[in-house]
Length: 221
Image 1 (cartoon, rainbow, N blue to C red):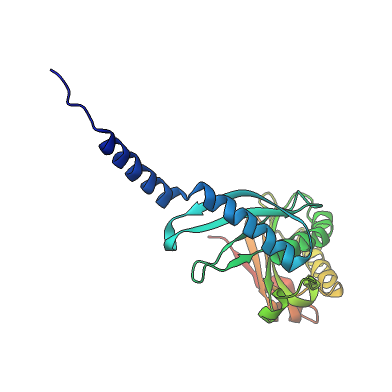
Image 2 (image 1 turned 180 degrees about the vertical axis):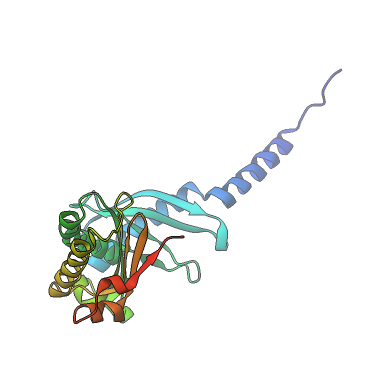
């Protein structure tokens, strides 16, 4: 059986459809280049520093948006988000938050690891200041404009009558040290193998004065 010949016009139409679909879902090569340049210029203008753009990507959701990872040329180990706001398509970035998180970890890690050497922990950073702080090129001290959420996991340690006094003293020392360093905690969680201690900002303030941290222990069920 002889197959019908496919005209060049039809081939071009098929290729055109294929490319159109690809560009819709994956973005265009010139779009990647355009936004790589735009992201670099945006960061340089905002922070007066040189940045490298890497891992640029595209999503077709919300009409097509580009985003990327970036890092300051002198700090290649600290990457942060830069991309388009899905509502306005304006360029935004997470440089301040990433740097604040890095600085908070650098400050807290030695304290936590000295008290709980076998622990796993997480530190979340939230701004408690007006959004105008993000408009300047000079980064504010994170201790002045953020609150932290600190979680510590002691999966292999049980809270018992035998170690209760020592564990309480460690909690008090940790919270007092953070307060002395002007670090603001909105929430604190310490998770043992059998119990958890959950404190919110008002509880933390009370502990600095008279309260016993064991009042905030709950059993796992």
